[in-house]
Length: 434
Image (cartoon, rainbow, N blue to C red; front, side):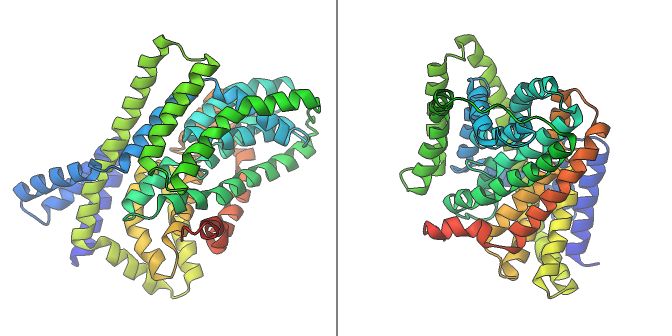
């Protein structure tokens, strides 16, 4: 039996078995990788190399950016940012049928991009918007579906921790280029959700919000500008070469602290809880990265990525068919695996295939994250799905019907991003980042 096939069988077989048994993903990755290593090298070498690779995996200056963005997001979640962004979102989508649903979508795009967390966006924006929509007579399942489907859009719109992780695993793809590439696909994801929300709202005859006065509109915009300026400062600084992504993330922490102090939404007694949340999330991410480093070594040592690449390329010489197969696999993976481990595991497998058929690594990174964003809103392991249903106090079963219609629009958006590279690459090229 070919060593690559044997190693892949053991690696993924043990990993999926552990997932079925309820073992945490990070532990499953580490155990499956170590078991596979034992079949190809002696135990003492396997132990030493696994420990070495785990330490090397988290010994990264770039990885600090993810940690700082996690802390910045925790501060913003408690700093009064959400309500100001929701008020701004009302101005953007307030004149469309079912205007509160469109407000929810725009609010998730804004808050998700600033906080860097789809789950935080679904919780923060959902908590505010769900009661308002219920008061206006919106169906709770419809409201929850719109909130769930739009919450991951912020993971494509920078600053994005998922894109930073992709840069790390892909061998140093430009973070600036990835950030700029995420804008149009992220907006397209939001527009896809809004298109279905518009159709359903027209059908149900949901109300249109009252037009605010000019003075009120100006006040709302001015109130939201400090929050939006963080994106300008951080992303502008990174793309302009003023500071690195890691330094930009540290600036985001400082900016969020200052902004929260100005808004007076955070008390000194809240700081320990904010730091605790950040430490727990950081620990999860670092352990995932460390365990995935062992898996990456095992796959590289046994030639699993090359074997999968040869198998997929042998199945067809048509790039369109290959991309469709990759999208299908990633969509399936996303239904039972969270975004972070999926990026860490499947980037080394699929990136060589993408580059082999002439796909730009920046473009592939956006397609990868877009696929996995859809995954985190689907059962059985969709974190945004569970949070959105919990916030709206509805069952998963009741949400699936309106959510399925939105999925169809998101798949169309995904195919557009996949087969029209300029959607992702136009802005980076315009700015000279490619």
